[in-house]
Image 1 (spheres, rainbow, N blue to C red):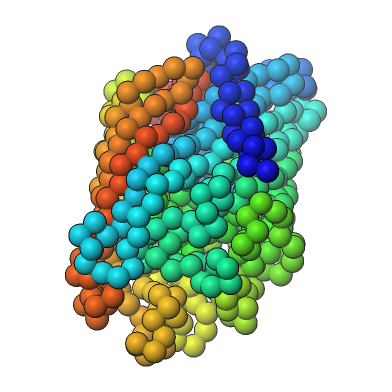
Image 2 (image 1 turned 180 degrees about the horizontal axis):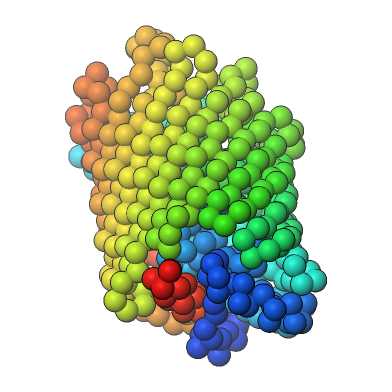
Length: 466
């Protein structure tokens, strides 16, 4: 069985290296959404309806750079890293991230819950899209992770909670992501350059809830760890059964989903039962080239296996900013995210995440600040504290990496990051006073997609002209 997964990994890594896309890098693609599109409309109507669309996954009139996770939006200025391959009818893109690391979550041994591990967090994504007639577009997306190869209990991460292993809640660990993390299809119909409607179906997939998931945000691409607020903000990015309808008018997008509320089970290699017992709605606005805003809410039925009777109202809001400057691959990307879980009674908890990544070609500096409220039950501290008590937890992470080698449109980088945790003093006997974590790693990832950068520049010129 393991050899099958290793073969899959090799195929996903090697296939994009043979993509003969370099000759496309000099193309200039107008991806604006204002009057430039109206000027292109007649020309678009005369195009071969089977030609491969160079556009957003859910609009023929938006730039690729706006692609996030699921149907979420990034700013148009966001960088895209990946490999591209064209046929006459299809455009394919391949993305991924592999970290090989040593992780110690309590390097000063102040507490009793820190752990250490050598592992390799990873994910791989492949998508394709093509025109359907003059106004339609079909797309598919797949995402895989080989996290389960490194153990069903995931990796050490102080104060992280969510999901289970061997029937017990995972605490101070981040669960592994599933082998099948996305298998989705979508169809978009263009009514005019300013109006689109789309449908998205995933098993698994991502409902219209929360910001773009952390592993797809440029502000967190270099950070190995999921946010401590993952299950308050973007944990629904792997949901076994999703159906979404959406509508875009100019800079606005409204969408709603029905989906399975239960989070993935412990069988990380399989497919869970679809339930379609929960719902969500989201409003997104991209007012300019550099900004993406969203607000969303969901009623989630029985998300945690360990607490099957507990349903959650989840509310989120986020601001994502992207600013390219200077030469290609010089940019700063940031995100501010709020997530709120209301499970009824006194079980109401807030979370905030602020993160940023400064990319100076081969050199990157990144950081993340988090504040979150977690309960006695979530931290498995029953019997030591009141069941209704909430603990305020702060975490600050700083990291840096440098790209040593670029070959076959792939980066090989080395990096280091560290975190300091600041929690309520009542937790000091368990976690210690301000425990420290440290990680060193090697990262393998795609280089910047230069075609996407040329689209960015064209789009930016149009915004400046208007």
